Image 1 (spheres, rainbow, N blue to C red):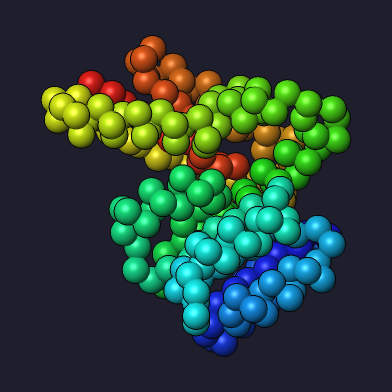
Image 2 (image 1 turned 30 degrees about the vertical axis):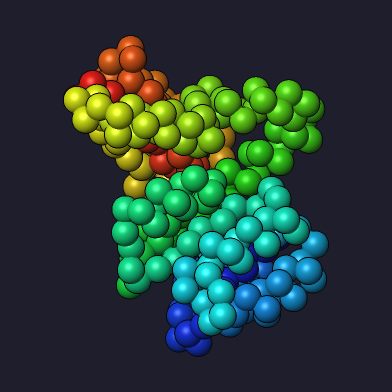
Length: 231
């Protein structure tokens, strides 16, 4: 049973997400602020995913995520906001959040995010259970399934590219983000093995279309990011 925590100060939003994410294999927990969220998190034995509003009464969603992560370090976290910005998205990326969800919600896209996040958490836990978690540096650097650089590795490369650009604007770069539509539906209908096979095949095709010096990394369960330097 997957445990999902939804934190939003608007009752309508909480109820909408509770209904949209409802499934026989999921337990949805709702909280209206950071205090209630921390109480809920303390009662959850194993948290799989937390969806947290960026602007909560008395604190920020990003601060709450840091506190929740201390309690449930292997869960996935996503920020929800009606006021998206490039700076906020980059900050979320640096914090290692699974995704950055904008309001009003596209429920189909939201469903894909949730399914993808749960799949990522499941794969990571299975990998550790199989004994692949001993080399922490290696696990952080490379995604277990695809062999691609992970989000953490990508963020380090992005920071380096930003530093080079600030020092000399001639060192331009671009970032592309790609995802698989309805990946969660494939996992749910055909099974995770079929989803994994599709993902690996997709990664192989993307890698064949970029230059040798370009970086393709796995951003989320169904998301890739490509860092193009020298553009």
